Length: 122
Image 1 (cartoon, rainbow, N blue to C red):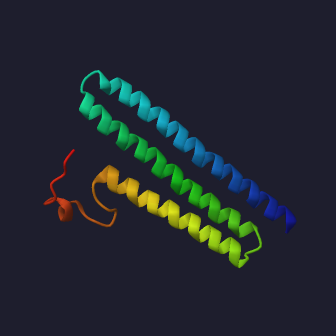
Image 2 (cartoon, helix red, strand yellow):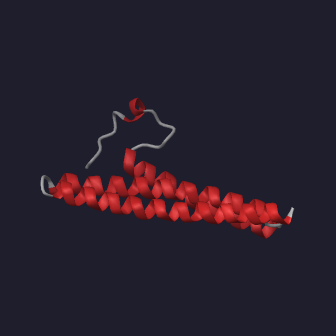
């Protein structure tokens, strides 16, 4: 049983690293796209940079939440650890929803037709 816990802990660490790398690579890709598009249109390139950065951060956050859940499974489930996990997941979920709203201009559960009547200033 000790070996399984050790492997699960390693898996959680690997997934955490993958989440951080996803954010870093997403940032690099966003910056490269920003520089490439900057030559054509400054306004459009800034919007593209924000959207691409948001996508990288959003994906990275979701991977990090998965790592936190897996890491919690390994440890002894005390009330303190469960509460800490809950707060971490809550904060990351709030960040994910905020970024999704920023990228798409709507919440994930809204259809595009529900939001068509809203005037976006971008």
